[in-house]
Length: 375
Image (cartoon, rainbow, N blue to C red; front, top):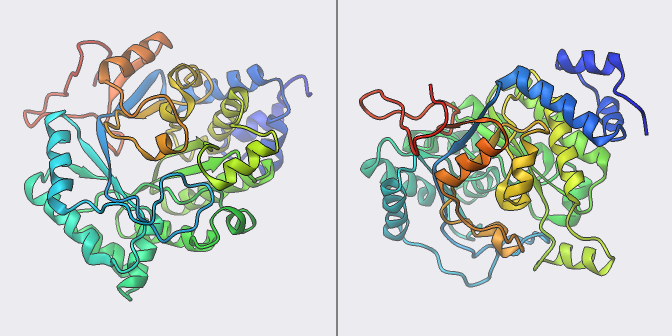
């Protein structure tokens, strides 16, 4: 392994110009040297504040016509929640002081855009201040095809109906070679990129995710991040990057891996992914989120010293990762999140989906648990 990070590589990182070759080289340096460098860039970008959002996941159905080999959530005959059942969950979220609902579900064969618009419009009619962070690029693409309208028009309609932001899921690995293996019926790399670009053009910011640790190569992981970086340089519409380690349980891709003696990614490899993403995205995407559901709470806490600055949400009802073998819970309290952040020597701060402080109508920032620093 190389003994240190070259000066010219570090200078490119400070300038936001790291290359694919730089990233691959960083994977070979001693891990804690990489972590220290990523942590320094984190400090330059966002300081010592670590954020989280009070939110609720709502999966309206597990029924799906997709054929993704990594999915442990899909069923052929799962229930589809009614609008009223969805609203009951939104009301529970509001009572728990959630500022965001994240609504996603399987792809239903004959369900077009009206279904998604109806969800958004009903939520906004009762809770106009609730942030709707919903409907993946795949869902939007599917609904536009069912409704026989362009993606651009579908996004405009969703925006008018109350959609505030979109999760940048369904990205998996942005390599058509990989996608042909793990999700052959899903939208192609170029189609995913175009939906996200069109969302940003319509005034709908998105997150960006990467599900790694299955059939992709290290080079394909880096290519994925560089595609995200190019989108951000063009649109500025990405709020955060969320690396998601693949859960290899209860799904065909994972079962094949386990038969071959390969399991979930080692924790050290996960931390290196977070650190490299911080380096590659420096100057472009400030927020790198660690998934406590995927990593576990202790490793997520340690990742705060490896380049991450956000621990995601309270979730309240996480079911997709749990189906694939995640065993770290389906919700977390604000108090525990803040305890984790303090334990890492950082300053907790509740945020909203757009990484702004949460305020009451009076203009005072909400203080959830009496600890931490708030603007």
